[in-house]
Structures are given as C-alpha cells and as structure tokens.
Amino acid sequence: MDRAALAAEARDAGFRLLSLDATPSTNDEALQRAREGDPGKLWILAREQTKGRGRHGRAWASPPGNLYASLLLVEPCDLTDAPQLGFVAGLALYDAIGAVAGLTAPRLTLKWPNDLLLDGAKISGILLEGHRIGTPPRFVVIVGMGLNVGFAPSDTPYPATSLAQAVGPVEVAAVFSALSAAFATRLAQWDKGLGFARLREAWLARAAGRGQRVTVRLPGREVRGTFVGMDSAGRLLLDGEAGRETIDAGDLFFGSLRSA
Image 1 (tube, rainbow, N blue to C red):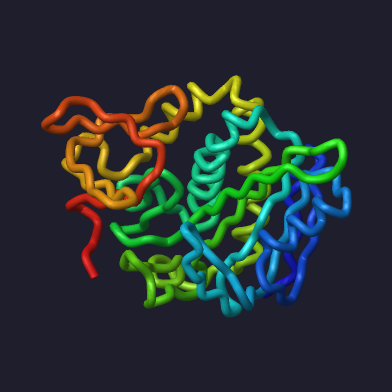
Image 2: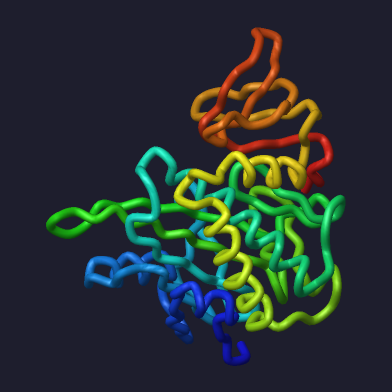
C-alpha cells in the first residue's frame, strides 16, 4: 500500500491517522487505544489484518490489497443514536468510491443496514462496536470499514466484487484519503444525530431494494414483505401480510441481489 494520508478536510476537522503494516484487527487496535485514553477522532489503517471480522463474528479475509480501516470516536452521541453512525459511514464510503472511481447509482447502492453493493454484489461492509470504558466511563464507538479495492474474497455470504474488477487498478491510499474527507463531512452533517433526518433521506435515495419485495433473516425466523423505507431511528420498515413491521437489525435479501 502506498503511503496513506488524511485529506485536508479531515486534518482540519481534528482527525488523526495511525497507519500500520499489519494488525490482528483495526477495531481491536482502536479499542486498545481507547483504553489507553485516546481522545478519539483517530483513524486506524492497516495494510492487512490477521484476524479481521465482520458482523455476527464472521471472519473477514484481510490480505494486502484492500482497505481495512477503523475510526475511534469518543462520546460521539447519546447511546441510542449510535447505530446511526452506520449510515454516516455508508454514505461516506459511497462518496469516497464516487470521488475515486466515478461510480454512482444505479451501479453503486447502499444495502440496509451496513453494506455497499456494486452491480448487485457486495463491495464493502461496516462493523460498529460500542463500549463503555474507563473511570469515569467514556462511551466510545468504533466504526470498522472494509472495502474491496484490489480483489474480492470468495468465501462470503453474498457474491462479492471489487473496484479493480469494475474500473481497473485503484490505489488504497487514494480511497482512504477520499474516505477521510467524506467521513468528516458526513459526520458534521449528522451533528450527533441532530442532522439524521437529512442523512436518512440521502441514504434512502441511494438504497438498494427500496420498493421491492425482500426477505430479512432474523434470529430463528425470516420476514418477507416490501421494503418501504426507514423510520426516524434508521430501522427498516417492511410491509408484509400482517401489516407494517419495524426491524432493528437483520440480513436483507432481495431479487436484484446477485445469487452465488
């Protein structure tokens, strides 16, 4: 990976960068820094992860060539608003891909709650982790992001693709710089949750599957219906045979998602 650096917008907003050759997990590295008293707004970027993970503890293959980054935020918002940071991150990744690779809808879409799709295949994932640490306790949120830049793993629950497959070679450092700028902008717009209504509309304008029949896999069951939108907290709104259902978290599947 070429030498990565923060964009000017990120530096001006007080963000910092720790760039590593290898680490077990950028999220774990961020948590350790938080336990050591780091004030936050710290990006952790690694060339590779040896024990990367995704949602639900799934292994995340992390050899060199892709983007592996986590952002440590300290007291970013009230606990109840923290899940909204996944939508902030999704929009920032979307903006960064557009800036570097010129990709946008309908090819590039956001999949509820925390994924990006390119041509119907997964290109990026987001992992949010919240902790209360220290005395007195501080609420910290770690936003982990993985983006398939140079290659796509094959052992994933969804078909996957990469920027290289779509547009040719792209530098990880260029993607990270664009991401750092976009995240600084989107985080300011979100304003600790006060600006979520605006970001929610921006997210929905880029959403995959809106208005379509979808399936949401929940622990122990599946729910089917029409994906009609998100409520004011970011929960999925699904119209099914029993009426409207509000879903906090789950795995979303729909017809336009490429099958393996």
